[in-house]
Image: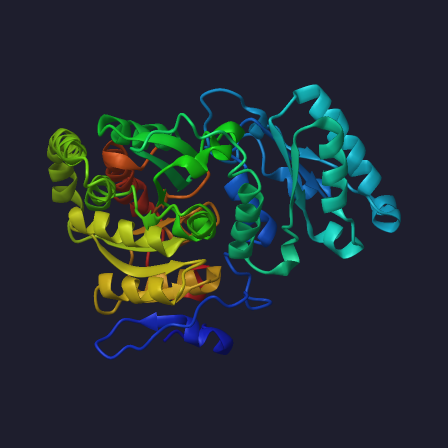
Length: 454
């Protein structure tokens, strides 16, 4: 184990061996370790942001509202109100005397101007500390303007990004069940945890529609308040990002009797399984399975020649993977294995015990498995394991480039679709161009100790 690893974090790092035990997880981030994990507010904003016809206002200092126009690739097929970031911009005077009146005034003006279908009000650390009752303000404004104004209790200090997911699910649950389901057919699903990065949700929806299945609502990519309101009429919830929307899926199962299943839309194996699993759920309709097989056959036949080409070039290369949810890491490991690459470092920000047990089964012996890591740890293990590629989010990019290895963005900021069969080719193309770039001849890649490189 690395000498740079903090003693308090040793049980959150594991090297896979025949006798390796379990990893500790679901802890609050260690103070001072500069964790890659985000706060509660960020978690809630990630989930709710793509609801395109709702007003999103951040009740707090202006800095919290920086999550705006071009920082996330969630696309809309219609309204783009979600891409405008609004804030009450609390100042020192507001901290002293309270910001409730300022919030009420801002809501009334913005709703009158933009005429949203609903409004989400995000609490931040400051509003939590000064005790503003955003719930009371939301109810008052809602009664006055006639639309749902929903408080999102996402004070950043309350926990981790995962707690933000729950706050977002609580907010969505107030919309679910309020719409008319009379026109929702039996062959119908909701897609949960898909955020339409670079238009991926449209691609996935197209696969299901070719199978004869209607997608009632996507939560929350290209989301619409009206569709979320009638989502309780669907027959099945299909959960893509397990960490973010599983809580809502369980809520809908309890309240409306809608079962849910976990899927992944990344990688040929998992994408195909996601289609087959849904088809098998509707076993009373055998034509759905037949159509699913046709979709899979047609899509795979298009991309296999390209995959063979990339496998010849990348076989034997090594990758480090650090992503938000562990379920995404599973799919990445399988996809990289398809082109002959091995994963030598794997970790996530929000994985649970079950996730890490599955991750351990998927990883090769010697792979370093991490929970809620920090830049120093990640840098050290990537160098020690001689990785050729780092797959992560925007916070991991500087780590890879500083070390001198290729980087592939697999987070919310990307503008290229990586899901589905088409996305697989985009992914392999990006991996190839990153790993095989001649620029790495001119950087001190894998030379010296970590301290010398950094």
